[in-house]
Amino acid sequence: MKKGDCIFCKIAGGEIPSKTLYEDESFRVILDLGPATKGHALILPKEHAKDIYELPQETASEVFVLAKKMAVRMVEKLHCDGLNVVQNNGEAAGQTVPHFHIHLIPRYQNDGQIINWTPGKPSQEELEAVRVLISE
Ligand code: 5GP
Ligand code: ZN
Image (cartoon, rainbow, N blue to C red; front, top):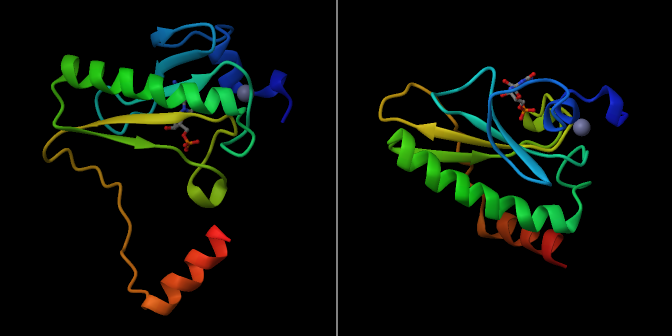
């Protein structure tokens, strides 16, 4: 996708208005239009990168620092009981907008939302095979 066609580029650049919580030279943090919970926010880098694989190293190192700052502020202001940090890459992982973003999802006791998976039961051999595959 070209930058000109990307909705998150337009939002991050201010071309399309958004409920902005924070902005600096490199990032804009906005409220999600389809929030999982009250305060669900998205961190958008201003420079287009489709996903974590394309994200420049410098942006990658800055974005989690910002995620931490926003998380602390959101917990203080919203008095939520917890907070999920979620980041999807690729359709198979649930990414619907192909511009890298981090979800900050405040959680409230009994909010009814589920961010979950079914735990597998791999053998030690299967775990070892995956360890070797990734680490070597
Ligand atoms: P993904 O599924 O790609 O990880 O997340 C995309 C998120 O962007 C969804 O939670 C969706 O509600 C949100 N979203 C999609 N379009 C817009 C938009 O135009 N404005 C805002 N603020 N959020 C959007
Ligand atoms: Zn973009």
